[in-house]
Amino acid sequence: MPISRVTKLYSVQDAKIAPLTADPAGGAATYGALIDVPGIQEMAISGDVEVKTLRGDNVKLASNSAITNIQVAVTHAKLSLDVLAAILGGTVTDSGTGAAEVSTWDLTGTNATLPPFKLEGVTPPDGVDIVGGDLHWILHKLKLSSFPDVGFANEDFRVVSFTADADPLLANGKWISAVLNETAAAIA
Image (cartoon, rainbow, N blue to C red; front, top):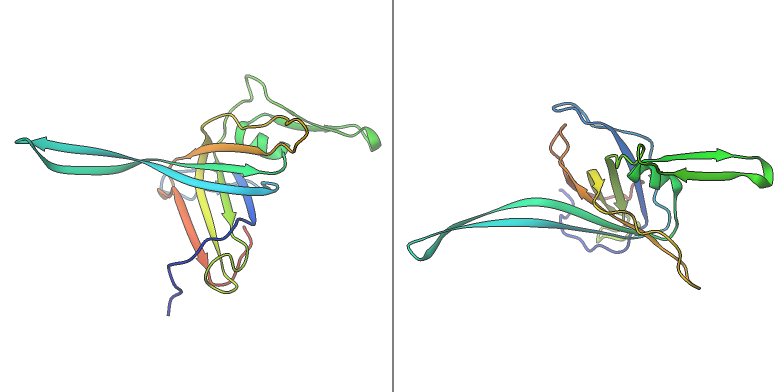
């Protein structure tokens, strides 16, 4: 008997992104190494639907709707230079030794590429109705829709956030997937 297709959603325990490295039409999409989104706090998914209405004889005759966009807004507690490079472009370089080690993320006019990436988030085990199960949201091909919210806050922690729009994969047409597992599984 299949598991229930109805569940509560409680919290988010982990999220990772992966650079999209290939998306051949009719082939298989490939991704780079997973990068942790540190201190994930929220992953809010929304979409836009465009409705066209046909009118005539002074009445509504028909209407048609189409999904025109899927968007995700992500908030996380800690800044990751590797996440910035994966979603904005740029380069991360390490230098120095011992107590003089430095990691630098640089974004220039030529390396601000806004590369496509995958995002996957997961509930904690038991964050769904199935005891020991979980739910994964997967957005297969994203691009930033605005510059990430970064910086400082006076006498407070500064959280990081970004918003991205989904495109369907050329390989299989997927925009978004919800995977409900009977047994909790790590993001892979």
